[in-house]
View 1: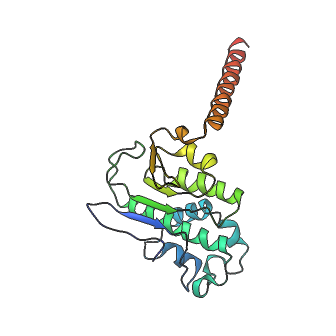
View 2: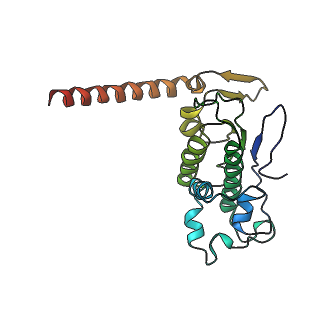
View 3: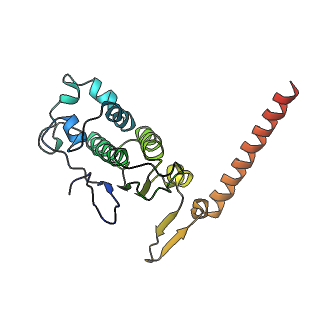
Length: 212
């Protein structure tokens, strides 16, 4: 299955990232742009969001480096990041062709739907954090994004999600409209205490500023 596909159904377009990335025997650029129109600005944005810009700078042929059959020249993390970049580029290409009806987050019905199947599982912690904030929270912030996560839920997903759906070991499905509801009670109390402490520090800083 291609890791960046578009499905036309009821005017909804979908961009998909597979946990098992598919890499083609072609250059890095062609693997990312695929069948979309090349746009330098968007291309550089997705390279940065996928943390590929540094990798490419260290390659003799840059983004014209041929990746070989199934990406034989890449590590597992690099394959995932190329596929992630392709998904971002595909999604932003769709958005570029759609009329903007609203700037409110997740409200425009014509915005693409982006499906991400455990996008950070093959990368290290720091790279994953950058990919999440630059790509999912950043580039995709005007789109509806559905993410399957097997790890780092508390750190990355809870602060960003509008809704969390979990499947328990008993086979039941739980839906939380407020993501903090998914935290264990002890973790939730700890987070609430930290939030209150942060609010108090901010209030003190404001008072000190006003009295100066």
